[in-house]
View 1 (tube, rainbow, N blue to C red):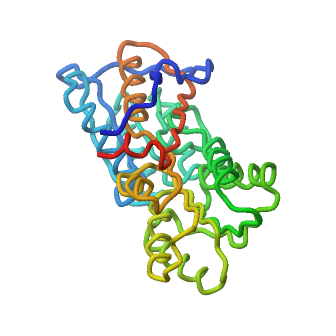
View 2: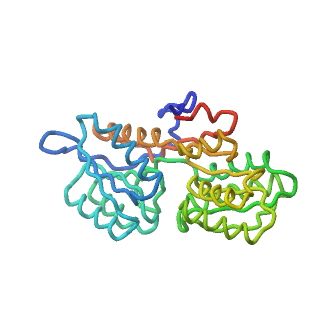
View 3: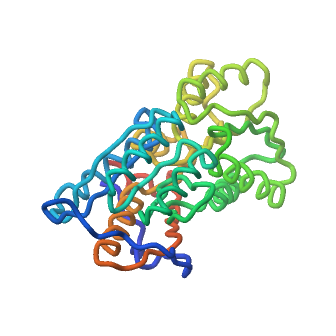
Length: 313
Protein backbone atom coordinates (compact mmCIF):
# COMPACT_ATOMS: atom_id res chain seq x y z
CA UNK A 1 0.00 0.00 0.00
CA UNK A 2 1.18 3.53 -0.60
CA UNK A 3 2.59 5.02 2.56
CA UNK A 4 1.02 8.23 3.79
CA UNK A 5 3.37 11.20 4.04
CA UNK A 6 4.95 10.90 7.47
CA UNK A 7 3.57 13.23 10.05
CA UNK A 8 1.23 14.86 7.60
CA UNK A 9 -2.30 15.58 8.67
CA UNK A 10 -4.87 17.57 6.84
CA UNK A 11 -4.96 20.07 9.66
CA UNK A 12 -1.23 20.70 9.27
CA UNK A 13 -1.31 21.60 5.61
CA UNK A 14 -3.69 24.51 5.78
CA UNK A 15 -1.44 27.18 4.34
CA UNK A 16 -3.67 30.24 4.38
CA UNK A 17 -5.71 32.06 6.95
CA UNK A 18 -7.72 33.90 4.32
CA UNK A 19 -11.30 32.65 4.31
CA UNK A 20 -14.08 32.82 1.81
CA UNK A 21 -16.92 35.15 2.56
CA UNK A 22 -19.51 32.56 1.58
CA UNK A 23 -21.41 29.92 3.49
CA UNK A 24 -23.17 26.80 2.36
CA UNK A 25 -26.91 27.15 2.21
CA UNK A 26 -27.13 24.01 4.33
CA UNK A 27 -30.64 23.30 3.03
CA UNK A 28 -29.90 19.70 2.09
CA UNK A 29 -32.25 17.49 0.07
CA UNK A 30 -35.55 16.07 1.30
CA UNK A 31 -33.67 13.55 3.45
CA UNK A 32 -31.53 16.28 5.02
CA UNK A 33 -28.35 15.31 3.15
CA UNK A 34 -25.81 17.95 2.12
CA UNK A 35 -25.98 18.10 -1.68
CA UNK A 36 -22.71 18.22 -3.61
CA UNK A 37 -21.94 18.45 -7.34
CA UNK A 38 -18.54 17.18 -8.50
CA UNK A 39 -17.78 18.49 -12.00
CA UNK A 40 -14.67 16.82 -13.44
CA UNK A 41 -12.70 18.28 -16.35
CA UNK A 42 -12.19 14.97 -18.14
CA UNK A 43 -12.75 11.41 -16.93
CA UNK A 44 -10.36 10.24 -19.65
CA UNK A 45 -7.44 11.97 -17.92
CA UNK A 46 -5.57 9.38 -15.81
CA UNK A 47 -5.02 11.40 -12.63
CA UNK A 48 -8.28 13.38 -12.76
CA UNK A 49 -10.22 10.09 -12.95
CA UNK A 50 -8.10 8.60 -10.16
CA UNK A 51 -8.83 11.61 -7.96
CA UNK A 52 -12.56 11.44 -8.71
CA UNK A 53 -12.67 7.71 -7.92
CA UNK A 54 -10.75 8.30 -4.69
CA UNK A 55 -13.19 11.02 -3.63
CA UNK A 56 -16.15 8.84 -4.55
CA UNK A 57 -14.76 5.94 -2.54
CA UNK A 58 -14.14 8.05 0.55
CA UNK A 59 -17.48 9.88 0.61
CA UNK A 60 -19.74 7.00 -0.48
CA UNK A 61 -20.03 5.60 3.04
CA UNK A 62 -20.95 8.98 4.59
CA UNK A 63 -24.73 9.20 4.96
CA UNK A 64 -24.56 12.98 5.43
CA UNK A 65 -23.91 13.65 1.73
CA UNK A 66 -25.53 13.10 -1.63
CA UNK A 67 -23.21 13.67 -4.59
CA UNK A 68 -23.88 14.06 -8.29
CA UNK A 69 -20.98 13.60 -10.72
CA UNK A 70 -20.51 15.20 -14.13
CA UNK A 71 -17.82 14.73 -16.79
CA UNK A 72 -17.05 17.83 -18.86
CA UNK A 73 -15.04 15.86 -21.43
CA UNK A 74 -12.49 18.69 -21.65
CA UNK A 75 -15.24 20.99 -22.98
CA UNK A 76 -15.44 24.31 -21.13
CA UNK A 77 -18.90 25.11 -22.52
CA UNK A 78 -20.21 21.80 -21.19
CA UNK A 79 -18.63 22.55 -17.82
CA UNK A 80 -20.28 25.96 -17.70
CA UNK A 81 -23.61 24.33 -18.58
CA UNK A 82 -23.14 21.94 -15.65
CA UNK A 83 -22.54 24.94 -13.38
CA UNK A 84 -25.81 26.51 -14.55
CA UNK A 85 -27.63 23.21 -13.98
CA UNK A 86 -26.35 22.70 -10.44
CA UNK A 87 -26.87 26.34 -9.50
CA UNK A 88 -30.49 25.97 -10.65
CA UNK A 89 -30.76 22.84 -8.49
CA UNK A 90 -29.50 24.90 -5.55
CA UNK A 91 -26.86 22.39 -4.49
CA UNK A 92 -24.97 23.16 -1.29
CA UNK A 93 -21.46 23.05 -2.79
CA UNK A 94 -19.79 22.58 -6.17
CA UNK A 95 -16.46 20.76 -6.42
CA UNK A 96 -14.68 21.63 -9.63
CA UNK A 97 -11.70 20.32 -11.60
CA UNK A 98 -11.55 23.10 -14.20
CA UNK A 99 -11.27 22.53 -17.93
CA UNK A 100 -9.87 26.05 -18.26
CA UNK A 101 -8.78 28.28 -15.35
CA UNK A 102 -9.89 31.42 -17.19
CA UNK A 103 -12.88 29.92 -18.94
CA UNK A 104 -14.56 28.72 -15.75
CA UNK A 105 -14.57 32.14 -14.05
CA UNK A 106 -18.13 33.06 -15.18
CA UNK A 107 -19.44 29.81 -13.67
CA UNK A 108 -17.69 30.42 -10.37
CA UNK A 109 -18.97 34.00 -10.25
CA UNK A 110 -22.55 32.79 -10.85
CA UNK A 111 -22.15 30.31 -7.98
CA UNK A 112 -20.81 33.12 -5.79
CA UNK A 113 -23.89 35.25 -6.51
CA UNK A 114 -26.11 32.26 -5.66
CA UNK A 115 -24.27 31.78 -2.34
CA UNK A 116 -22.94 28.34 -3.34
CA UNK A 117 -19.33 27.65 -2.21
CA UNK A 118 -16.94 26.36 -4.87
CA UNK A 119 -13.94 24.07 -4.28
CA UNK A 120 -11.38 23.91 -7.10
CA UNK A 121 -9.56 20.62 -6.62
CA UNK A 122 -6.24 19.52 -8.17
CA UNK A 123 -6.12 22.46 -10.61
CA UNK A 124 -6.43 26.13 -9.69
CA UNK A 125 -9.10 28.35 -11.17
CA UNK A 126 -8.53 31.81 -12.55
CA UNK A 127 -10.98 33.97 -10.65
CA UNK A 128 -14.04 34.36 -8.48
CA UNK A 129 -14.25 33.21 -4.86
CA UNK A 130 -13.28 29.58 -4.36
CA UNK A 131 -11.15 27.29 -2.22
CA UNK A 132 -8.15 25.65 -3.88
CA UNK A 133 -7.14 22.15 -2.73
CA UNK A 134 -4.02 20.72 -4.35
CA UNK A 135 -0.27 21.03 -4.71
CA UNK A 136 2.03 24.00 -5.10
CA UNK A 137 2.89 23.75 -8.78
CA UNK A 138 6.02 25.88 -8.45
CA UNK A 139 7.34 23.75 -5.60
CA UNK A 140 6.78 20.63 -7.72
CA UNK A 141 9.06 21.99 -10.42
CA UNK A 142 11.61 23.10 -7.83
CA UNK A 143 11.71 19.58 -6.34
CA UNK A 144 12.28 18.05 -9.77
CA UNK A 145 15.06 20.55 -10.38
CA UNK A 146 16.75 19.83 -7.06
CA UNK A 147 16.77 16.07 -7.67
CA UNK A 148 17.89 16.55 -11.28
CA UNK A 149 20.76 18.75 -10.10
CA UNK A 150 21.99 15.84 -7.97
CA UNK A 151 21.36 13.08 -10.48
CA UNK A 152 22.43 14.43 -13.87
CA UNK A 153 26.02 14.06 -15.15
CA UNK A 154 28.27 17.02 -15.86
CA UNK A 155 27.28 19.04 -18.94
CA UNK A 156 24.11 16.99 -19.31
CA UNK A 157 21.78 17.51 -22.24
CA UNK A 158 18.15 17.34 -21.14
CA UNK A 159 14.72 17.36 -22.79
CA UNK A 160 11.59 18.59 -20.99
CA UNK A 161 7.98 17.50 -21.63
CA UNK A 162 5.45 20.14 -20.64
CA UNK A 163 1.84 19.53 -19.64
CA UNK A 164 -1.25 20.93 -21.31
CA UNK A 165 -0.83 24.58 -22.38
CA UNK A 166 -2.84 27.26 -20.58
CA UNK A 167 -2.76 25.79 -17.08
CA UNK A 168 -0.95 27.14 -14.03
CA UNK A 169 0.36 23.67 -13.21
CA UNK A 170 1.97 23.44 -16.64
CA UNK A 171 3.56 26.89 -16.50
CA UNK A 172 4.71 26.79 -12.88
CA UNK A 173 6.08 23.23 -12.91
CA UNK A 174 8.23 24.21 -15.88
CA UNK A 175 9.27 27.52 -14.29
CA UNK A 176 10.29 25.84 -11.04
CA UNK A 177 12.39 23.27 -12.87
CA UNK A 178 14.08 25.67 -15.27
CA UNK A 179 14.90 28.28 -12.62
CA UNK A 180 16.26 25.65 -10.21
CA UNK A 181 18.52 24.06 -12.83
CA UNK A 182 19.85 27.48 -13.85
CA UNK A 183 20.67 28.20 -10.23
CA UNK A 184 22.10 24.82 -9.17
CA UNK A 185 23.43 23.37 -12.43
CA UNK A 186 24.19 26.03 -15.05
CA UNK A 187 26.17 23.39 -16.95
CA UNK A 188 22.96 21.49 -17.76
CA UNK A 189 21.50 22.34 -21.17
CA UNK A 190 17.80 21.93 -21.97
CA UNK A 191 18.06 21.07 -25.66
CA UNK A 192 14.32 20.60 -26.32
CA UNK A 193 11.21 21.79 -24.50
CA UNK A 194 7.73 20.99 -25.80
CA UNK A 195 4.30 19.81 -24.75
CA UNK A 196 2.96 16.26 -24.84
CA UNK A 197 -0.33 17.34 -23.18
CA UNK A 198 0.07 15.01 -20.18
CA UNK A 199 -0.61 12.11 -22.57
CA UNK A 200 1.35 8.85 -22.73
CA UNK A 201 1.00 8.27 -26.48
CA UNK A 202 1.99 11.87 -27.22
CA UNK A 203 4.93 11.51 -24.85
CA UNK A 204 6.14 8.44 -26.71
CA UNK A 205 5.80 10.16 -30.10
CA UNK A 206 7.60 13.31 -28.92
CA UNK A 207 10.40 11.19 -27.44
CA UNK A 208 10.74 9.28 -30.73
CA UNK A 209 11.18 12.62 -32.53
CA UNK A 210 13.80 13.75 -30.03
CA UNK A 211 15.69 10.46 -30.29
CA UNK A 212 15.97 11.04 -34.04
CA UNK A 213 17.02 14.67 -33.58
CA UNK A 214 19.56 14.34 -30.75
CA UNK A 215 22.35 11.76 -30.53
CA UNK A 216 22.90 12.67 -26.86
CA UNK A 217 20.08 12.85 -24.32
CA UNK A 218 21.14 12.45 -20.69
CA UNK A 219 17.84 13.32 -19.02
CA UNK A 220 14.11 13.34 -19.74
CA UNK A 221 12.09 15.42 -17.29
CA UNK A 222 8.31 15.31 -17.59
CA UNK A 223 5.44 17.23 -15.98
CA UNK A 224 3.60 13.97 -15.30
CA UNK A 225 4.14 10.21 -15.19
CA UNK A 226 2.10 9.36 -18.28
CA UNK A 227 4.48 11.33 -20.50
CA UNK A 228 7.47 9.81 -18.69
CA UNK A 229 6.13 6.29 -19.27
CA UNK A 230 5.66 7.07 -22.95
CA UNK A 231 9.24 8.35 -23.12
CA UNK A 232 10.48 5.12 -21.50
CA UNK A 233 8.70 3.08 -24.17
CA UNK A 234 10.40 5.07 -26.94
CA UNK A 235 13.82 4.90 -25.30
CA UNK A 236 13.52 1.15 -24.77
CA UNK A 237 12.61 0.63 -28.44
CA UNK A 238 15.64 2.70 -29.50
CA UNK A 239 17.95 0.91 -27.02
CA UNK A 240 18.72 4.27 -25.36
CA UNK A 241 17.05 3.88 -21.98
CA UNK A 242 20.11 2.75 -20.00
CA UNK A 243 21.83 5.67 -18.29
CA UNK A 244 19.07 8.17 -19.07
CA UNK A 245 17.81 10.11 -16.00
CA UNK A 246 13.99 10.21 -16.16
CA UNK A 247 11.57 12.02 -13.87
CA UNK A 248 7.79 12.41 -13.69
CA UNK A 249 4.97 13.53 -11.39
CA UNK A 250 1.97 11.70 -9.85
CA UNK A 251 3.50 8.47 -8.48
CA UNK A 252 1.17 6.23 -10.48
CA UNK A 253 1.55 2.53 -9.71
CA UNK A 254 3.34 1.88 -13.00
CA UNK A 255 5.72 4.80 -12.52
CA UNK A 256 6.60 3.69 -8.99
CA UNK A 257 7.40 0.23 -10.37
CA UNK A 258 9.65 1.78 -13.03
CA UNK A 259 11.46 3.72 -10.30
CA UNK A 260 11.86 0.57 -8.23
CA UNK A 261 13.17 -1.30 -11.30
CA UNK A 262 15.72 1.45 -11.99
CA UNK A 263 14.25 2.64 -15.29
CA UNK A 264 13.03 5.93 -13.84
CA UNK A 265 14.91 8.10 -11.35
CA UNK A 266 12.12 10.07 -9.73
CA UNK A 267 8.39 10.52 -9.45
CA UNK A 268 6.63 12.94 -7.12
CA UNK A 269 3.58 11.77 -5.20
CA UNK A 270 0.51 13.87 -5.92
CA UNK A 271 -1.59 12.32 -3.19
CA UNK A 272 -5.15 11.84 -4.41
CA UNK A 273 -6.21 10.55 -0.99
CA UNK A 274 -5.11 13.73 0.79
CA UNK A 275 -6.69 15.96 -1.86
CA UNK A 276 -9.98 14.06 -1.73
CA UNK A 277 -9.99 13.94 2.06
CA UNK A 278 -9.23 17.66 2.19
CA UNK A 279 -12.31 18.31 0.08
CA UNK A 280 -14.45 16.10 2.32
CA UNK A 281 -13.16 17.86 5.44
CA UNK A 282 -14.13 21.18 3.85
CA UNK A 283 -17.60 19.83 3.03
CA UNK A 284 -18.08 18.74 6.63
CA UNK A 285 -17.16 22.22 7.82
CA UNK A 286 -19.61 23.79 5.39
CA UNK A 287 -22.33 21.33 6.41
CA UNK A 288 -21.98 22.44 10.01
CA UNK A 289 -22.30 26.10 8.98
CA UNK A 290 -18.63 27.04 9.12
CA UNK A 291 -16.35 28.92 6.75
CA UNK A 292 -13.65 27.16 4.74
CA UNK A 293 -10.10 28.32 4.17
CA UNK A 294 -9.06 29.85 0.90
CA UNK A 295 -6.30 27.33 0.26
CA UNK A 296 -5.26 23.84 1.30
CA UNK A 297 -1.81 23.01 -0.09
CA UNK A 298 -0.83 19.33 -0.15
CA UNK A 299 2.97 18.82 -0.13
CA UNK A 300 4.59 16.44 -2.62
CA UNK A 301 6.66 13.42 -1.57
CA UNK A 302 9.68 12.35 -3.61
CA UNK A 303 9.86 8.68 -4.62
CA UNK A 304 13.27 7.39 -5.67
CA UNK A 305 15.00 4.03 -5.87
CA UNK A 306 15.78 4.30 -2.14
CA UNK A 307 12.14 4.39 -0.99
CA UNK A 308 10.10 3.11 -3.95
CA UNK A 309 9.40 -0.24 -2.26
CA UNK A 310 7.48 1.60 0.45
CA UNK A 311 5.01 2.85 -2.16
CA UNK A 312 4.57 -0.31 -4.23
CA UNK A 313 1.14 -1.92 -4.11
